[in-house]
Image 1 (tube, rainbow, N blue to C red):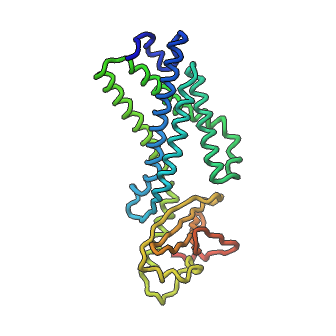
Image 2 (image 1 turned 120 degrees about the vertical axis):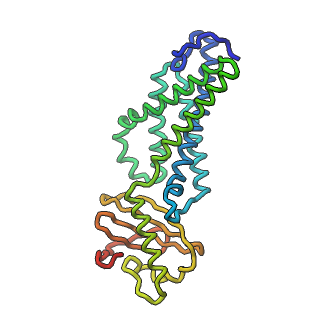
Image 3 (image 1 turned 90 degrees about the vertical axis):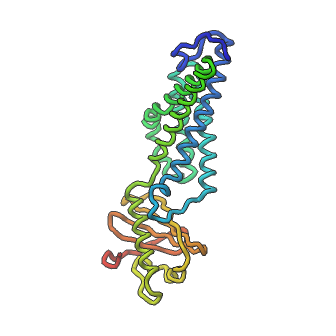
Length: 285
């Protein structure tokens, strides 16, 4: 157990005086910040990656477990770095701002890996996003400092307090992860594709395909193969949603749903490029 010196509530935010105490406390707090950041990010990533499958049980959503674990590992590394960055500075407000800037920078980097052009559009929002991230990094800083001050309490009292702190950290991560679920428009698009696919595949093989499937004439050949759906947003002004159906036999189609114009178009493959194709609303189901 560490010496009981300088264990006031202020030490949750700041560092104690004295070179030896300062170095020891900062290192411990940075290590605690890294662990807390890792737990927060891991909880957020796991819940955010699986929340749609849990809540939308009426739709056969595809869950790519290798991608889930890869995303979780990346989030955990980023969370640990963010926690250490937030907890390291001697001054509380400096650590909070540094962590907020680091969080937004990390988010921009991840966005750049997915879509380079869109990232440039968000650059003017850097400072506002830093300000919005302050509550998160303040919680990180407080949690790391709290964990360090708990090291000076006797065994049972410390363990109970640490258990409560761990529970709060995980609850915050889980709660944040629930906000990563599909927006209502995407949920409606996925359910629409599922409904139209189910109806079309249940019809006789010789029946005329709906206009939405004119570009997938071989669709009914895969009627006996179950499928799973996944969605990804399209960067368009009308809020279009792309839904990919992957059949168990490897066949794939990609459908674009436009909630504004109320049309649906599908093509074979994992990407749909429609060019000047126009759907007739009267032909849509």
